[in-house]
Amino acid sequence: MHNLLKAEEGYIIPATFMLSSGGFRISLDRKEPGSDIDFVSHAHTDHLAAVKHSEWVLASSQTADLIAGSYGLKPRVPDGAPVPPGLKLLGAGHMLGSRQLYVDACDSGESVVYTGDFQMQDSRVSEKIEIPSSDIAILDSTYPDPGVHFGDRSEVERDIQRWASAISRSGIVLFRAYAMGKSQELISILNEAGMAPVVSERIAAVCSVYKKHGAKLDYLSTGSEECDSELRGNFIGITESGADALPVALGVVHAKHVFTAVVTGFAKMFRFDTDMQFPLSDHADFSQSVDYINATGARKVFTYGNSAELFAANLRSSGIDARPFTEYQCTPSI
Ligand SMILES: [Zn+2]
Image (cartoon, rainbow, N blue to C red):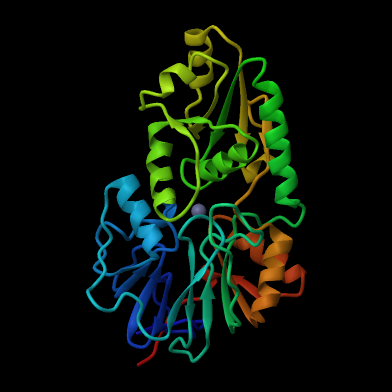
């Protein structure tokens, strides 16, 4: 068995991204050898490594539906015990179905919360974040830099509405956004201003799962018949990230100017090759992460992800006892 304590000399074994509690070893958004339960925080692809071969996926019903609807995979859950005692799934505010994992008592006796990707501000199409009191917090490091601030989401939303409404009089408007999560948020923002965008079939497939779980989204799919007449005018479109050649192709086919925009938190850090970029993020920025940690009352913080080292160092500069998760090995509790 393993638990979440720093290894003593002579006991170091390969680090695993797991918690141990109540006789279960629980992997966190990845497949680890020897795990009994594989927690999947949400349906973005970089969190799904365990799904294909896991015997026991622990995830929200919305996440399971998104995985099935978008990737054709059916996560396995044993009959009768979807959430073992001592574990809780709490809203993470990142996208539909995103959850944190809270463990009452790890084998070390400490309570632990693992955030997955999380967002502190309210978003239109995901459940609110719930913040538990916890001894230890394990945090996502997507935005480790204290210099990156995401302002009030409603201001960015208004900027998107104003720009799309004005510029669509002069040509086609094409937004680029993640197919899952950000696109549905963008549809809701455009709908509020009376605009129903045309979306790719892949985005439409995700939208249908969102609608099943109560989201109100008005859009046209490129695969639908009604779409044809819409495409003759100055339509507003949303396509998933990566479709870089599409604006040129659309401009040629429709003989119109195509105005482009990207919607992502990374717009705060990078210049994109688009006419406009809107910094709408579904992650916490650094100061929101500090707010989160303070709200949990955690005495120890572990960071994970690509920027784990930098994030931990910046948290320590703010007086928080933080270390990258990998610095903490698992000790056998024999
Ligand atoms: Zn995510």
